[in-house]
Image (tube, rainbow, N blue to C red; front, top):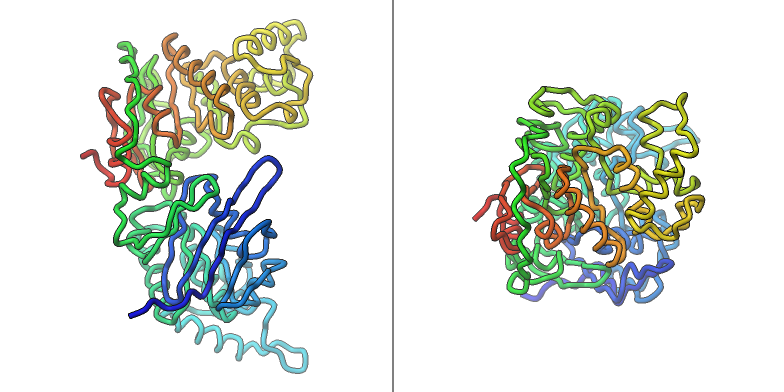
Length: 502
């Protein structure tokens, strides 16, 4: 039996931003009545492809066809009116309004200018019944769980005569029961002939619900595959850029010294963020965290730094049980954290290199005790030289520096405090090879000098190059911890794919 004609076809899609080619000749097709997973690591081009499809961005090259006809959407509203609806990770509804009002907001049935409330509630019940949902549509949306709120968002999208439904990370905040409920709804929509584009970082969910998948890497198309014919190990190999047979073994990291336990997490966890985990970090030890985006790496870092509050377990520093309620309390314990989002959670772009560099030290002293200018000059000159920050001008606005030099300023900010544990979340992402090498060398030197480092990176080779011990995460669970003795990227990839060391 021949496959049905695609309801959606994107051909040769190109999109470029200043200095970045986000999409380069990407093809994508979507069949009616299927769940199609769009896969790729951070920066692969998934979000850009969706935004091009839904009219957020204009395309620079290529064409889009819907039901065999060329289309060019000027806005998300235009895409929606053509039958392409999107439900994002964060439910974009009005929780203070009723379920029925949310389904029909902006489209309320009226007669002589007045809303027909009974007709609207009856119609809302009929729409939800199509999804096998029986809830009080007159109740405020806020009275229902996030999962049901997402069902309402889907019901609204489907009622706008949707031919294509895009679900962008819809399960990120759902528990197992809520995910099962969502998948039941998705299967029902499939039966009704609706094509679903599904984005998720949870591999088990991808393999449970999707029929086919398209993989992107660095803005280019890797390929389209039947989910049943591509193993999880092969999928990860294609996402990270190397087939397993070609994954190279890197030089083994020398074993760490016999440092004392510095940080000990025992069944530490946070509902919806990271399942309870146990992890010990010794003085002078680099512990790497490997896993796909969304696997829980950053969530572990934030718990250890007090940026998020743990719901379970305990944390010890130097054998003493502590409660890190805020990052300030973590800094007082000589812990430091460089976030992966350096622009939103690190840099203050309109301040100078000097002002950004001394920020953490000034905050630790309190704003009523300003650092003397002579002391500032000594520290700034020392760390600009030590980290080879260019240009070596402390009065330059940091927003005018390259990404690599911005990252080195953030590292210097924390090194001034002489931390005992340095948490680095994707410190080399988006920077040039030279700066990346310098940062890697610095991490090794800090470790050799006795500092403990928690190193998070999506690049498995980088994790192996620097770490004495590697923790592997999958679906927000720490599934394995392994000494870096003879480890290869094959081993890490297979562990990420299977959820257990083979």
